[in-house]
Length: 119
Image (spheres, rainbow, N blue to C red):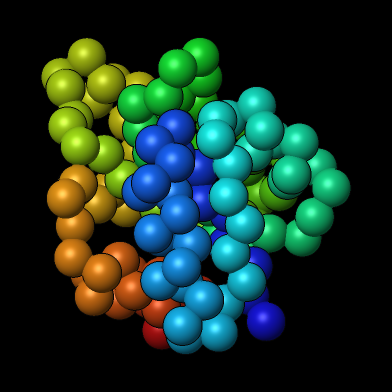
């Protein structure tokens, strides 16, 4: 069973994503911020990181960089309600960006593609 870590400072959205991920049979764990996510990454085997971009403290791009230092094979999907120009220089280097609001099918399709690996 693949384990997915969902990091978002919005508890409602985090909860909905975790609930949706349980249907296809994945194990989903939630974290309210990047620091909690890093603690979880140090303690558990995680296959995929789904992280909000804009969060208090460490943003999603910074989290992904730290996470990839810990787990180089970790897969990453970013989610963001907006993607400002100032974030572009700090932008995705490890995964795809999905804009909020997103459709559940879009997220599930991207997760399946990531977990399936290169063709």
